[in-house]
Length: 196
Image (tube, rainbow, N blue to C red; front, side, top):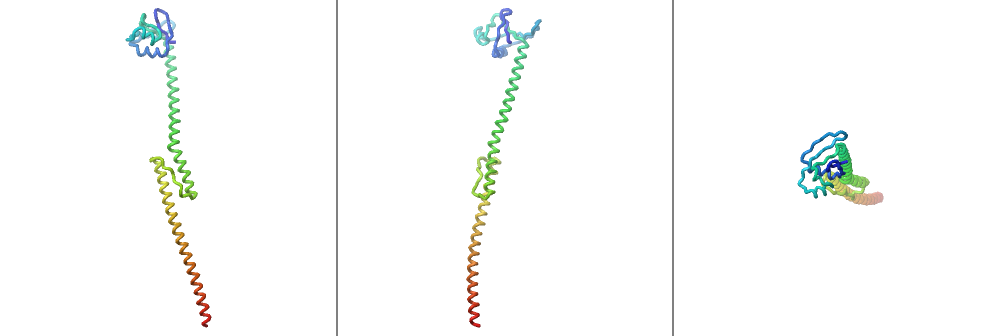
């Protein structure tokens, strides 16, 4: 407990906030050992009026001008503060790690998964599919390059299909010409047989 000496041995409890206020108000301190318990005696020098000091600290120190607290209490409070700081640091590190994972998942994994899905559709033969380009980073460049490659494949595929159609048309024309020539050849054979 934090105790204050006021008018002899009259001790009162004070909050942690008062402890922090003492740190702000202290001009000097001295440690003295007593028979059963060690105390830190702090002479108080303050610019606050007695009523303000009483409102801040919860008691009036106008008569003695010093406050004392047990070193065991100070050590307990320091240990509790250290434990709280450690716990808050640990919680902060875990929160930062989770936030980093969530951001990486959103900015890296999701675009790669979408690109992978579009790649599978294109590989299955659907050349109308395009990857969504949402950023200008490496993943955005990869999606843009994939779209350019798919455009090029689609264009070459269309050219090949057009060439194939022209080839079929030419083939049909040749077939028709061949049939006409065969018919003419048959006629010539028949005419030739008649002449002999």
